[in-house]
Length: 325
Length: 279
Image (cartoon, rainbow over all chains, first blue to last red; front, side, top):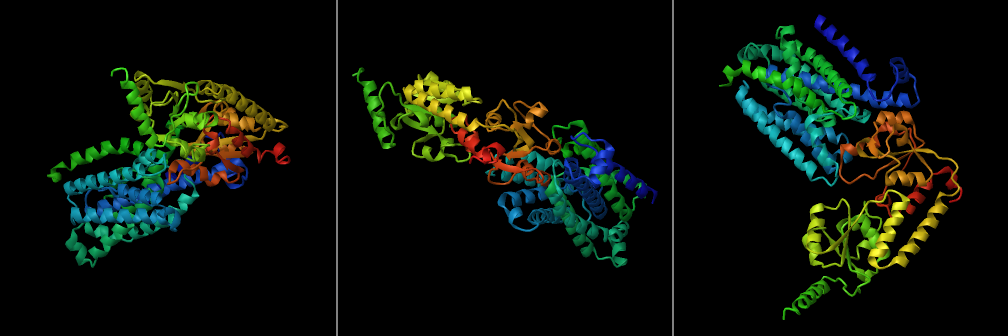
C-alpha cells in the first residue's frame, strides 16, 4: 500500500513538473493559472501542447509497464517485454501502414485499430513460438526476428511514401517521441489503453495462481485459454494504441517490473498495478529529461530508455544464462 | 575523310534529335540551351526562343515546385545526368550552384559550357539572374524589358503599405525562415513583418510550437503539404494553431527567385489590410 501511495505522489509531482517544462518562459504559477483560466496564448500552450503531452506520457508508460509485468508473469520469464519481443515494433508497422495507405484518415479509429491488429499478430506468433513456459532462448530469438521484420517493413513503407519527410521519420517510429502531440492523439489512444488495462487487470489472480504451476492453476478452476486470450488482446490493445501515437518505446516494460518486483514480494497481481504506476513515472521522467537535456533537438524517448534499459537487460541475461541453454 | 567526320557526327546527332522532336535550328548568337535546375528552367522559358530550348530539368513540370509547370510540359525533360545532357549536345548548360558537382564537372571536362546560377534571394539577385540569362542566350533586349516590367509591377505592389502585420512562415517540423531567404523577402515585399526576426532567425531555423503560440503572430503562412502522411507535417494541423489566423500556404511561386514571386506577393496581399480595399 505504502509503495502505491509513494508511486502516486511521485506521479503527480512529475505530472506537474512535466506541465511546467517547455520552451515558453512562464513562471510556475502563471502556467498553472493559464491552465485553469487562461484564454490567451499561454492558456493554449498549457492546454493544447503540454497537457496532452503529459497525459500521453502517463498512458504510454502505464501501458508498457502493465504489459511488461503481465507478459513476464504469464511466461514466468523476466525477459519478456513488449519492445524486446517485437510487439511494439509490429504495432508501429501497423500504424505506419494505416497512415500511408489513408486507412487512418478515412476509417474512424483506423490508426489504433491497425496498430492493435498488427500487435495482436505479433503476440500470438510469439506465444505460439515460445510455448506455454516461454523458454528464454526461443522468446528472445523469436522477438529478434519479429522486431527485425517489423522494423524493416516500417522502413520500407516509409521509404515508399510519396511524402519526402516520411523517410526521416523511421527514427520516430523505431524510437518514439511525445513532441508536439495533441489531444487528438490522446483520444485515439485512451479507449484502447483503458480496455487493455481492464483485460490485463482481470487476469491478475490467474497470474498469481500460475506462479504455482499450471496444474495448480487448473485445479483452482482457472481457464488457461481465457487467461491467454485476455493477455494477448490486452497487451495488443494497450501497447498497440500507445505505439500508434508515440512510436515504439523500448525497455520500459523490462526495467519497471524488474525494479518493483522485489518490493511486492514477486506477487504478479500486485506487480501489475505498481508496474503501471511505475511505467507512467518512468516515461514522464524520461520525457521531462529529453526536454531538459536537448530542448531543441527532439531527443527520442527510446534512446534514453535504451541507455537505461540495455545494461539492465544484459544483467538479466547474465543472471538467467543457466536457463538459456 | 577525317575533316568530314565531325560533320557526320553532328548530322547523325541532328537526325537523332529530330526523332526526339527537338528543334536544332538555332543560330550562333542564340545558343541552344539545356537547363538542369528548376529555377534556371524558368529563366530559360521566360527569355529564350522556343527553338533554343533543347531540354529542361525533370522538376520543371512538378506543380509543387515549378511556377511554370504547364509551359514546361511542351519541352523535352532531362534527368540532369551527364550522359544524357552530353548526348543532347547543347551550346550551353545552365545549372544551379547546388546542381550535382559530379555532373557539372563531367560536362565541363567533356567540353560543354556550364553556367552556374546562385539561387536568388533578393530582388537585386533576381534582376541580376535575368540579365545574365539574357546575355548568355543572346536576348539582352528581351531580358531588359522583363526587368523593367518586373520592377514596375513590384513598385505597384509595394506601394501604399502603411501597416506591417506580424506574420510567421511555418513549415514541417516547426521550421521557419527569416528575412535573408527568398520567402522572407516575399513576406517583406508583401508588407508583413516576419516574426522570425524576433527570435533572431535570419536564415532558417526551428521555431518551437510553444514559442510560436506565445508570439501570437497576426497571420500564419504554412508550407504546402505533400501527398502521403508524415508526422513532420502534422505540426501544421496542430489544434494549438487554431486560435491563430492561418491564411495561405506557400506554393510553387515561392520556390524560385524569378518574376513569378510577383504572383506570390499578390496572393499574400489579398489578406493585407492596406491592400484589401484596392483589390
